[in-house]
Structures are given as structure tokens and as C-alpha cells.
Length: 61
Image (cartoon, rainbow, N blue to C red; front, top):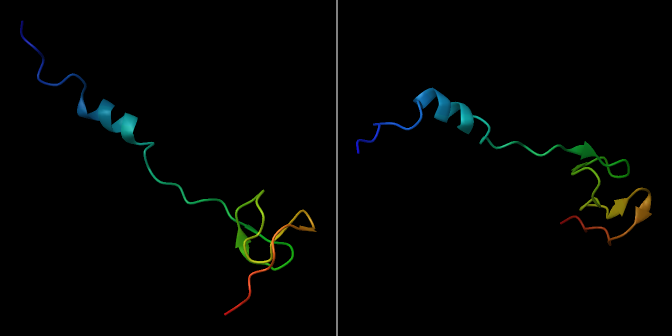
């Protein structure tokens, strides 16, 4: 039995793949040290989250 040359058109394949792009993470400013950090996570620089100290602060080299 014969098979079609292409199962889906190029436009349909490329439309499906259009959402495969990489997205930069959203960053928010830490209220204590004013550096950028991922929201809802402990700040990797000062070690605080929601006004509490969770990790020891990183010493600046």
C-alpha cells in the first residue's frame, strides 16, 4: 500500500514547534539586599525570605 510523502504539512509541524522556545526566568528584586532573585525562593545572596533569615549570607570576595 502506498504511503503519503509527508504526513503533516510543514506549516502544521512548525506551528506545533513554535512553543519550544526557551523562556528567561522571571526575576524580582530582593527587598533586603536589592539583588535579583527568583520569586518565592530564598535569596542566594543574603539568605532571607519573607523577612526571616534561612541561610547564612554569602561573603563578598
